Length: 114
Image (cartoon, rainbow, N blue to C red):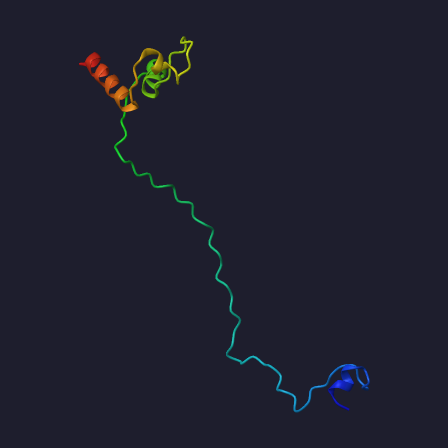
């Protein structure tokens, strides 16, 4: 009887037997140990690092003047204006960059103080 007879079901046993001597069973050596993964540390959330291209300006104001200062610096139109803030510079014919508006405001503030 050969392997082809066993495969077709003509053999006595349905499972295939190992031919030749059996290998030695696998064992662990006495000085072996199980490897364990190190404990996972919780991720540390660091605050972002802010790098300024130019130094930020510090503007001191009173709580009553805060809204007008913000509107001057951001270029927002006055609340009583009927045009939107995007159309305000075009309506007056003047187009200023935020840096130019800041310079005009600082010049006016220094004139009022000193």
